[in-house]
Amino acid sequence: MSESTASHVLDRILAHVRAVKQGGKTPVVVFDLDHTLLDNGPRTVELLLEFARERGDALLESRLVAGPRHHLPYLLKDILAGVGEDRVDVIDAAVHAWRGGFFTDAWQRFDEPVAGGCAYVRACYEAGATVVYLSGRDAPNMAVGCLESLRRHGFPIALAHTVLVLKPAFEMPDLEFKRDVVDFIGTLGDVVASFDNEPGNCNMFHRMFPAAETVFVETSWAPNPPPLDTGIATVRDFVRPTGA
Picture 1 (cartoon, one colour):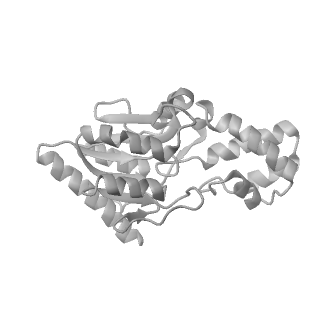
Picture 2 (picture 1 turned 90 degrees about the vertical axis):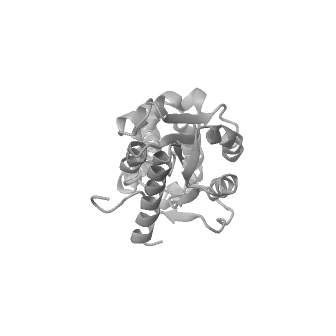
Picture 3 (picture 1 turned 30 degrees about the vertical axis):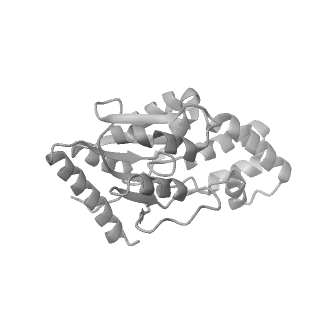
């Protein structure tokens, strides 16, 4: 999708939000977090850097410092392969260390917004939308860090007409969780749009809310995704022309 077409999709959703609001109803826009509004690549890189430094592995540290921080592959082994790390023992130990920190409150401070994401969410909120942050992060281990991260980056949060919905348990599959909460989301108002980086989640929302705009954010996603259903739009970020 071209930049102009992507911008048209984003503008169309904003216009729909305003129209629903002017009609006396509550428009609802749903946003996933990881790889949709927030890039967790920097979180992974910082965890791996700490791992390398604690091991005294100057080779891995130098590879990570010189490598990318944003829009990284979904799997950690692919991230490490991307910086030339192929030592099996190092990869296995890195995965173990990464898992110990990635799904916690503290390390979310390194996440960075996807381009244009904060401005677009604020635009939706200021146009009258109830903003739902719907994330596969789990509440017991990540709620505090998630709230702090959103607040620090300027997303509307902890305000009227903002809702943060996280998994009740780490082990719960993301798609199952999101499927379970669609009825609740429907009680909040008229769902105008949803944004997600996982094709399976997009298909589910598209089928549950056929009158809404479903948008696939083409950043990073789990391996072997299903094909997107017909009618789902695609954007790479939330950048819109100046003044839009």
